[in-house]
Image 1 (cartoon, one colour):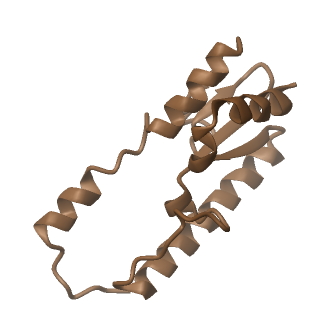
Image 2 (cartoon, rainbow, N blue to C red; image 1 turned 90 degrees about the vertical axis):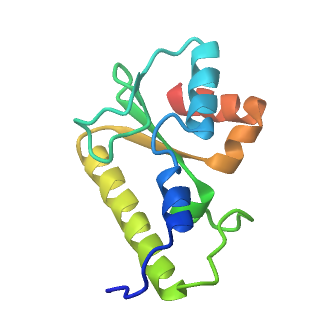
Amino acid sequence: MVNDEPISAVRSKIMASVRQVNTKPEMAVRRVAHALGYRFRINRKDLPGSPDVVFPRRKKVVFVHGCFWHRHAGCKHATTPRTRADFWQEKFRRNKERDALAESKLEAMGWSVVIVWGCETRDAVSLGKKLISFLS
């Protein structure tokens, strides 16, 4: 899909400021995992999808997905912009497809995968329970 509209300087600056690593939700997951005594690696580029948090000895990985970008079903943060709806639908479809491919590749390699949604990181207690359940 080719877009003939020039990207405004303001929109470009906003999109450039969207962090890809060390986001608040990622930091929350890492903080809770560390407080629970788990040791991990971050953003392993040698694994499919470059998982956000990796527990190599346990062969388990955590992806921290933003509700907007990865379309958390039923979440109030998974809205679709009103402008250029076709572009966004395709973008979100590709994101979900890429996520599913990375997850299936990791599982084929013997890794266990869990998704932590951005909205789940606001409650440290339930996040801790989710991590304990996954890592046990």
